[in-house]
Image 1 (tube, rainbow, N blue to C red):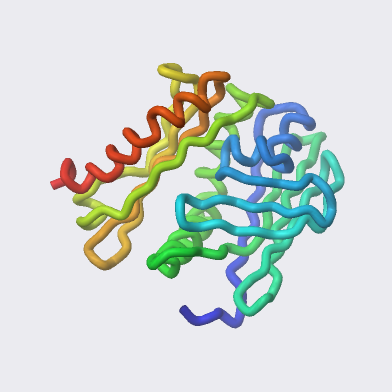
Image 2 (cartoon, helix red, strand yellow):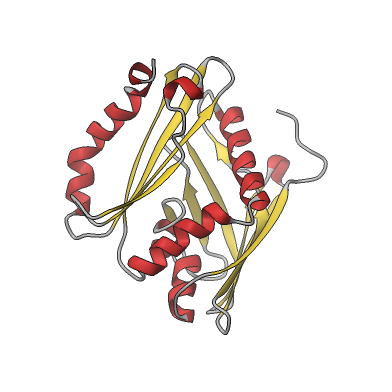
Length: 233
């Protein structure tokens, strides 16, 4: 995959419910980011490390460059060839507004890293085109129903044979849960262009029983994801 001369960048701004502290915790702490985006590790200090886990074979790491609670959080990620890609999140307490600016990309591992990178680029472009509606919906759901609660992540993915429309006509869903545990699930699928589809489940669970549930039930969710090719035919 060639390195573009001009990096792909996007900027999103949207207003969300919550107090200034709740909004800050959601966009600038490890638990908060993991509660609506992707599982994230974060050292909450300038010079600290941030690692975002994107499924089973991909992660993106960076360094915190600015931390001014509750207004400004910024970090930079190494890009291709060592070039830095900045990402900034701003919280405006008076208006409960979040502004997110950054470049799309990551450090991907595994045989399908190029397709995965293209997928994340498309996600970013679509989110920008739709004025951040997708990210806004997940963040709004978290801040409305689970602000400040400890999250347990549930991730499962598989590459299955068949084009996306044969695996599932529309796998991009966001579902709020009340049983067996409170939380929500997000499903996504991407056609890899080689006769196969990458399907992913990302779960956000808010319960003391969630870690045990994930340990016990994740194999079943993984098997269900893998079965989509069979059920879709």
